[in-house]
Image (cartoon, rainbow, N blue to C red; front, side):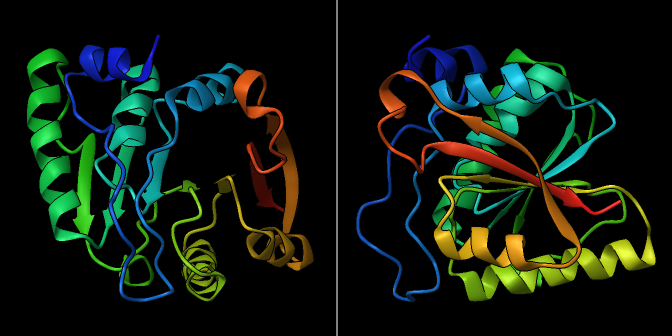
Length: 202
């Protein structure tokens, strides 16, 4: 399916990119993960309905709705931009017209990523290069503090990740690379077009 086809199936609108840049260099502009890339990821990486996924810098919620539609996982979108939060809530309303969902299955938090309070059941965390490595490090630290209080297996999913993100996790004593999904077709000429999944060391 083409991008607009998935948006039609899910009864949402997520296609437009953000025009311009955020005033802080720490936060990057919104661009949704291509549906074709998500298709390849989820052909090789499965989620469970019991998983609770957090998308940092969720924009208009594309990943959230796609994951819920495929796996019925609980999904939380974290977004600092007022307009995108409004768009996400509109998409949630129209998605409900198509799909019967349980209360709380999809939710959005309007806050900075580093201010998001990690829930004890959050166990999968998605990043499409949404902000600087300094903020990424703060978020990872918040996740680890949560795991320390509520032990569980977690995974960090990176798409089109900056070298800084990768170096940080590669050098981190608690994380190891569990899976790499390199994309094919139109994406394969770009080495950054891949998903990297890191988990805690056993």
